[in-house]
Each structure stands twice: as C-alpha cells, then as structure tokens.
Amino acid sequence: MIAVFAVAPVVVITLLVGLRGVAAMRTTSDFLVASRRVSPLLNSAAVSGEYLSAASFLGVAGLVVKDGMGALWYPVGFTAGYVAMLVLVAAPMRRSGAVTVPDFAEARLASTPLRKLAAVTVLVVAGLYLVPQFRTAGLVLSVVSDSPYWVGVVIAAVVVSVTLALGGMRAATYVQAFQFCFKLLLFIVPAIWLLLQVGPQVRHEAVHPVPFTHFSHDTAVDFDLEVTLLLDEPLTVRTGDGRSLTIPAGEYRVADGSTLVFPAGAAVPGVRGGAAPGGPDWSRPLLDVNDADHPLLGTWAVLVATMFGTMGLPHVLMRLHTSPDGRAARRTAAITVGLLGVFYLFPGVYGTLAKVLVPQLYLSGATDTAVVALPSQVDTGSTGTVFTALLTAGAFAAFLATSLGLLLVVAGAISHDLVPGGLARLRFTVVAAAAVVVLLALPSVKLDAGVLVTWGFTVAASTFCPLLVLGIWWPRLTAPGAIAGVAAGLLASAGAIAVALFGPPLSGLPALLIAQPAPWSIPLAFVTMVGGSLFGRPPAWSSAAMLRLHLRERPGFDHRRSRPPARDLGHSSWSARRSSAARRVIRRLGR
Image 1 (spheres, one colour):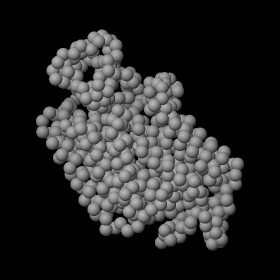
Image 2 (tube, helix red, strand yellow; image 1 turned 180 degrees about the horizontal axis):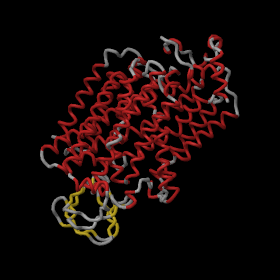
Image 3 (cartoon, one colour; image 1 turned 90 degrees about the vertical axis):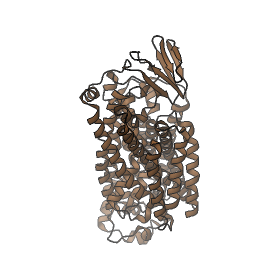
Image 4 (spheres, helix red, strand yellow; image 1 turned 135 degrees about the horizontal axis):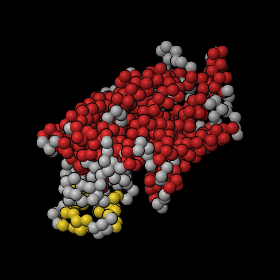
C-alpha cells in the first residue's frame, strides 16, 4: 500500500506532463533540444533533476554504510565536474549549434566515422547509467511493498518511454525540473525529521562510530541478493519460517530470497568483499576500492572518474543545447553547481544514521535501500509510514528524471546519428530502447548501482572528455587523432569493466586499476588523441570551426539558420567574416 501512495502520484504527474508536450512536437529539434528555448533557471533545475539519479538519492548514503566516510568523495567529484564543465565546455558546446555529442564531433571535424563511433560510445555510457536506474527502481519497490523485483523495473520503463515518446525534450525538461524540486524537498524534510527524532544518543553514535560487531537485539535480515558470510565460530539463527538453523564456522552461502533472524548478542558475521560498518577503516575519509589497500589512489580514481566523467555525460551535454545561446548555457552550469551543492549536504546524514540504525543492511548487500529503511526504524507508527512513502516517492522521481534524459540520448544516438530518421523513428526507438534496458536490468539486481554509475562516468571521462577539451581548445586536433583517442579510451575503460565483471578475481593494485581504470584510461585517451593528431595536419577550415565555438553570438543570432554543413565550414563566406579579433583568438589557442 505504501508503494501505491508513493509511486502513483509521481507516475501520474510524469505522464500528464508528457501529454502537455505533444502539442509542441513538430520537428526533430523539438524532440531532442526543445527548440533551444529553455531559460537558464528552468534548465538548471532540469539538469539537476536529471543528474540526481538513483546513485545520488539512494546510492551515496548506501555507499557510506558499505564503504564508510570515504564515500562522501563521490558527491565532491559529481559537483566539481560541473565547475569544470562551466569553465571549459558549456558555452563553446552550445555555440557549436549541434544537437547531440556525435553531432558536435562531426561539426567540429567533418568526420562521419567519428560521429558513428561517438554514437556507439553514447550507447555504452547510457547503458551503464540506465541499468542501475531501472534496477534500483525494482529493488526499492520490492523493499517497501510485496511486489516482485521486476514490477518496479517495468513500471519505470513504461512511464519513461511513454513520457518521452509523447513529449520529447520539452516534456522531459518540465518533468525533471518539477522532480528536482520534489526530490530536494523530500530529501531535506525527512533528514531533519530523522535528526530530531532519533535523539542525542543516536546522533552521538553517528558522529562517533562504534564497530558493528554484535547484534544489539534480535535482527531479521532479508537477503535479496546471494551473499557469502564468513563466521569464526558456529552460529544458531532462525529462518524466516521460524526454524532453528546452525551455521558452521567458515564460509556459508545464503541464497537470495532468504530471511535469517540473528539473536541478540550474537557476533556479526563477516561478508566477503565488505567490512563491518563503524570500524577504523570505515571511519577513514578515504576509499579502499576492492580492498586493494591503496586508499589514496582509490580515492583519486573515484574523483577523477566522477569529475571528468561529468564533463562527458551525453545526457547532460545535450541539455546545454537546449539553451538559447552560449551565455545561457554557462549560466545554466553555474546555477546547477549551487543546486547540487545544496542537495549533497544531506546524503551523509542518511548514511551515518543508517550505520547506527540499520547496519545489518551491509550483510544482505541491500545498502542502496538504507534511505527508505530508516523511517520505520525510528517510528513504527503512521508517521514513520508517511516518511517512508515520501522517500520512496522521491527515490522513484530520481529514477524517472535521470532515465528520461538517458533514454533521450539513446534515441538520439540511434535515430539521429547512426540511422537518421524523423519523429516517428525517434519515438519508436525510445520504446524499443526501454525494452532492451529492461532485459539488461532484470539480471543486474546483484550489481551495485553506485559501481555501475561510476563505470558510466569512467567511460565518458575516457572518451568524450578528451574529445571535447581538445576539440574546443586545441586547433590542431584532427579527425584521425580524435577517432584513435576515442577508440583507445572506449576499449581501455570498457575492457577493464568487462574484466571486472567476467574475469578472474584480482587483488591489490591490479584489482584497483581494473575496477577504477580512470587514472590510466583518461591519460591514454588524451595521449593517443594528441599523438594521432600530430602526425597529420588540420584542414584549412578548422580555424572557422574553432571561431564558431569561441566568439560570442550576435544579438538575435540563430544557429539553426546560420550553421553550415561540416563540409562547408571552410567556405569563403565564412573566411571573409573573420575579423582581426577572431584571428587573435585563433593565434592564442594555437600557442
């Protein structure tokens, strides 16, 4: 019943807004970039709503329970990425007149193969980002109700695909802006209520953590995922149906769907691949990724991936193209930094309280559900039920808002960049892509949402970040060099992810560099792109292409009418319009 009251209003409002966008849907530009008429304030709210995904609303707090205080570096990287985007990318990207990232690649370098490669990269990044959205929607709905995991996955897919097919980017903009305000309210108010409700003792334990070594009371743990427990001595527990079960010392595999009740005073078992909340390693403000025993390098790996990955996220970059001009795009990025900064003040509150109130979630591997599990631990009455419903609604809004943007870039990559078509093909692609993501999300319940999203950032940082930075700021970039760099970054990052998922278990430094390849895959892409470009010469029209990225637009300037095809960027009419100031810009960039 909680799920119905929580999810139904979010679903209904999302669909109604989608219907509102139908009347304004006439062209591909309407569908993909809302005719470039979105104001900075509305756009920044939409960007924030799109960006604050399941990994932010639930995942950061879950990572604090699982990995300790070092997990708070994730939001630092997420927000810092927008500062880099503001300085390096926002305005020039909008001035390019492109619609998608692959569109920008072809407009800058006049290379159809580069456009196709960029479109494939968009599909990889969006897939890694979309699967955890649908996966967490199913997991959260199954926690707060008796519904199977697949129900939440299917609901999220249907709502997102129908909304986009009806209203495109315009509908997504209004939905995401509304859902950001909705999520912010439903994240802050319950956090304040929890802090007031738990009392001084819990607040003291939250900021002075004690290792979770023994159960303080009879504790039921629902294992939604298969988990291997590590016991130093035999332990007698009760199963979900009340039977007594003695677990021998050593390793014990708990099947998914099981429930075990641990008695008060019993020692907490270890978990393969995890550390109990509250210990010295948990309190350390660094991340020891994959228990590699390189916490400083692990922290830098996450920061590099999240910061530079933000600059290359295709669904965020597409939002820049909805701005009226480059100045509006820069304002959008600046306001977004402030909005995200407010939101990210609170995941740590939920994470530290969850460590005290629901530390057993680390046993079951369901730390992503810590936020929605807290209210019922504080208040077992109607008030706790209401706040559980509110947090569930906010979480579902997070899944939908992010999925809208991601599904839109998938449709754009397929039906605008790979196989160009009209509105009908774009709408069909949205529905078909959502169905494919559902099939990928159903077997992904065992994967950590935060890990999947970080991998998406890693691929974006290793491919689009070098392409954008060099494409905007280095006049000597050539199409062969760009293709080589994007391919190297994609193969390196995606290959490392494949090894982490399907390869043999690793330990130490190799485990860290495979699980978080950003420290070496990003430099590899930059070096390959620069080296490949130095062996060739940029075409004569590349100066004109650079000019369009850096010169401020004239009042009333309309990119849709003025933008020449990539093959015509060196036309004499463009060359004739270069002023002495423009030549100075090119000389400065070339130094």
